[in-house]
Length: 559
Image (cartoon, rainbow, N blue to C red):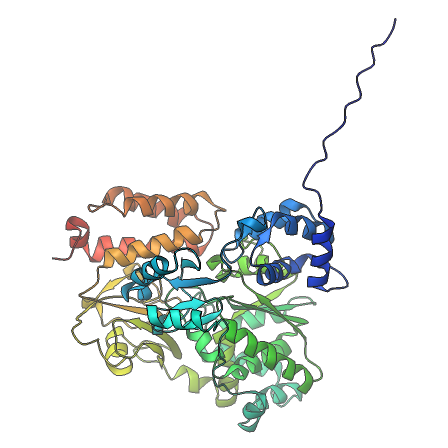
């Protein structure tokens, strides 16, 4: 019996073909001898910076050079807001982008109107983007011309920078290494190195000071060090400077003025805990801080012989990377999606190793606490609280900015004694005690000590101590709507309660008369079932409005 032979079929090549001209230009741009999987985001930054966008040809070439799938490159590039992923060169956005912050403080100060004026004027020749908080709330409204921040932005100020091609930041005056050493800088670090202060004594002093993590979680710093000291080497230190909580700008304030106080705390922690390598994760919205840190880290490396290797990583516009495990995923060159726990990062963290994770400000206080003693720090608190807090105060006050005050200070004391009082013609109406996720309280509740553990019974928390002041010219419901839109934009999408919940809440909150029962049910589902703090806390402001500002929900305005 004859067998009928099948016709020979030519198979279609799978995937996108590599453009070898693009490959050669990419090799020249990256200029590395070997490609690291954890540097994927750094490579994408180089493409975005040099080319103005990331085309599919570049992603294909990058996947070929790194030996990973095109899907891996694509999913990472499209996850982060600061990467413009386009099909081809003809689809690239305009060469210049002006970003206008539209978070609560900036929105209250006319950010939306400013963005519209700029868009009407430039008519697409300059890309105008409304973006989440850029960490300059004390100078609202704030804008950024390419990488150059414009404080108290007006149409005229932005246009002046565009016309002058002023695209990069001027460095603020700050205390550099030589100046810092003249004022006993690194004296405590040297005492740790030569044994004058033992590692055990350092941990005990830190525990007695009751210093907590100042990024928002409030976990005791001394306890964290003790846990890490017991873990097996190699151990890593991951420092979170992805200061993305709307209303927060304290880390930028300290790094643009006194960066070595943080660096000394970093080296002390490394020596005491036994750290083998340090990773610093800096938000992309802080270009001046990036330059300062790069310059000063090089000086530190030359000044000290026996210190761990230090790598600085650049964020790419993802609020979720403020969550410790999402930051770790991002440092590893992946999408910044939170991990399920256990295991905890102290045991299985960055690259699977035990990891000490700290916010920048926590390390900022290490030198002073070890130098002056635990009692010096602990006794600074008031109203039964311990320590100091760096409050980022913005909104309707005369002196917005970072105000260092005792933990337990009330919002009324912040306004009157630190922030210069309310703006003329404005009456205190309400406040965010802890940034966008910290809830909203009415002015009548102005006597609550602000600290970890004092606000939770009211459905709020202090978090990163970002205090935004509302006046009688504002509506709490509008502020809450702004925050839920922010969380909708920043949800990583990993879990349904957060991804779908923020989207549904945003739609429901557009209505003049809110569906109270449905919003409360939705909020409960988000809080109970979301896997990380973003989804769990995203509904705090809307619940606050329902509880403390019910008239706004009934009639769409204040009565």
